[in-house]
Structure formats: structure tokens, C-alpha cells
Length: 161
Image (cartoon, rainbow, N blue to C red; front, side, top):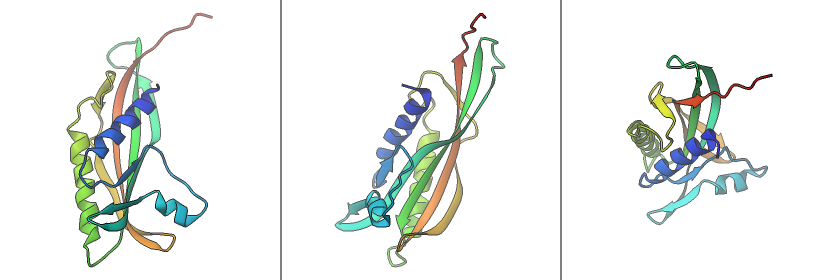
């Protein structure tokens, strides 16, 4: 497995442990038909079907020589987690997604190695970078983005020409 896949799978597993989190996907999901797309995020909680889901992906990766040793590089995985909850003013779904986003941030920030032996550090800590209302097909949803970076140190193998 790649470091990205290990990291992504670790994040998904951590998030799935959060009560009432909804559907958690380890990739950005697409469907040409908006109804099929929304079905990817449907859950039933308390007997009520609703849109509540998350995606986890890498937005970018930076690589630089390690400041610790010349035989390794530091890779910074800039991860983004996107969440959505179908909007219902009567059910105060804004607070629902705000609370879930807080729980994701706090939960991620308590894991020191993400289950990957080469993880060095979070840089910076997980944080909510966006919270707004968006339309998905005919469904109005609360939408958020959580961003955080994970630093990985990887040994460099030099190849002679």
C-alpha cells in the first residue's frame, strides 16, 4: 500500500468511529445523475432518512529534504475532508454539521501517528476551513471542509547512474 492509501484508510476508520457520522467515503464521489449521487450520502438515523456524508482525499503533497538527515525526505500530505448534511431548519441541521465537524477535528487531533509508522507530525492541526450552504441537485445542504496536513518522513534510496 502507498502512504496515501494508508493515511486515507486510517482517516476513514477514525471517522467511522464517531457516532452518527453518516456515510464516510475514502474518495471523492461522482455520479452523472444527481439522485444517484445523493444516494451515496443517504443514511437513516432515528428512523428518519437524511443526507449525511463525508469524503476524504488528498488535495496536494509537498516534498522537501529532511532537516533531520540527508537520507530522507519530508512529505506533507495536505488532506481535505468534505462533509454535508441535508438542511432542515426545524431539525437545526446547521448545529448538527457544526458539531460533527468539531468532533472530526478533535478526534483527528488526538491521533498521534494515524496508524502509520512513518508519520512525524501534524502541521498544522486539523481545522475547519469552510462552512456554508450549498445546493446538491434539489437538496439544500450544509457543507463543510476540514483541512489538515500530515508530515511523513521517507527514506531516500539513491540510484547510481
